[in-house]
Image (cartoon, rainbow, N blue to C red):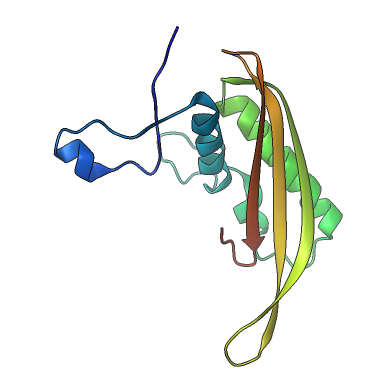
Length: 143
């Protein structure tokens, strides 16, 4: 069975001019959907309160240790992917948190936490291995 998957962001100009929207592979579609899960907070999608992850809940939490933060993010992303992304099986999630220092135009230093999320699994339809990497800076969240 052959499926077409729409690439994001959707081009509304193409849709309005009745042109064919941009398509992508199943792996790209899964990676795009995981990105949507990771960048949405619980309750943001009014049609499904369970869509999203807990990164937003800990975004400005400077008191929690990096290990607890890592475990909470990994657990939340893993649960959400298993619940919402039915095209993947054997999902595993690894999270690492690193601190990076930035210097702005005024030579002021800022330290931000970078979260690297690696997702592995198997595409059910093709039985191919799947891997994706999401990277975020938290406090405040940016990607």
